[in-house]
Image (cartoon, rainbow, N blue to C red; front, side, top):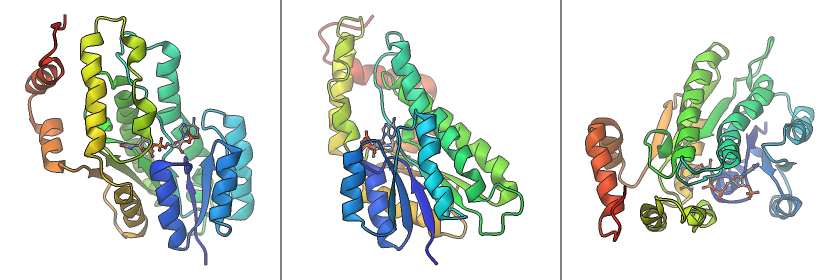
Length: 285
Ligand SMILES: NC(=O)c1ccc[n+]([C@@H]2O[C@H](COP(=O)([O-])OP(=O)(O)OC[C@H]3O[C@@H](n4cnc5c(N)ncnc54)[C@H](OP(=O)(O)O)[C@@H]3O)[C@@H](O)[C@H]2O)c1
């Protein structure tokens, strides 16, 4: 019998590749996109076992309307993969309130709204007789480690980590497993979308370090892992009897863990400061 999975944000990147692999494995995918053209293209690529859901995660009316089709098609979901997300870089001091709010709304608040909508199909309902579903939240290593000038994103992913833990503990009574995937740099469009995004802060005192931060984003892209690393892990999270609660995916996982969990804060602060300021003509304030 075919199993049903909802994935948010399947137009590009991690979501798109998860759709590819899970569809190949025989699942029926409900994939969310924002543009009609993406819905059409994907429907042509996957004429069977794929249903596009057209919504922007910030538009709850559109989400509710689009998800009716899921409730009409199946009486249980095998999984919900909360993947749609954006990164809004910039110094916290100068980031406009609407940018900060958009970052939190898309990466965090929308995850709760969408999850709650689908919980009855995942098993959080009286008299649910099917196997409980799983929730996979695509978090980030930024949910474990705070980088300056990527603060709004880090805050959103730290809060998503917290939300993942809370849901996991609350939904245990229903047998719903909740898992966080925490990728480091992965080769997707998210990098291109952010190039030169620091330009609007060039008039601020942070200008000297922001140019370096932008260069570091470019550098991180060159060492990014292929997107299939995440799709393969998603499949493992869905098929393993007892998946872990969280998975870090990073080229230098041990080094990252050392930096994030073991080195003293002040040493890490010094290291980041030195990396951002070395060779700058103007010393930071
Ligand atoms: N790539 C990395 O290095 C990396 C590392 C750690 C974590 N992540 C996380 O992985 C997830 C996927 O990112 P990605 O790298 O695959 O980036 P991506 O290629 O930019 O894909 C993002 C997806 O989210 C969708 N999306 C963005 N805003 C949306 C909104 N308001 N409503 C509905 N859908 C929206 C996009 O749709 P449109 O095409 O319509 O914009 C797209 O399908 C994100 O949560 C990201 O934080 C990525």
